[in-house]
Length: 81
Image: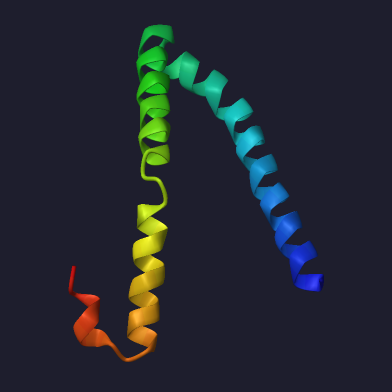
C-alpha cells in the first residue's frame, strides 16, 4: 500500500508540473514566435498526441512480450514475427 500511495502521488506531481509548465511556457512562446506560429505549433502538437493514441498499446505490448521472451531465455524467439 505504501508503494501505491507513493506512485499515485508521483503521478499527480507529474500532472501538476505539466500544468504549471504549460501555463508558464505558453505566454513566453507566444511572445517569442507570435500567434500564427504558435497556432501551427499547437496544431502539430495536437496531431502528434492524437497519433500517439492510435498506437493502441502496440509499443508497450512489444516491450512486454520481448522482455518476457528474453526472461525465459527464449532469445531465438524474440526476433520472430
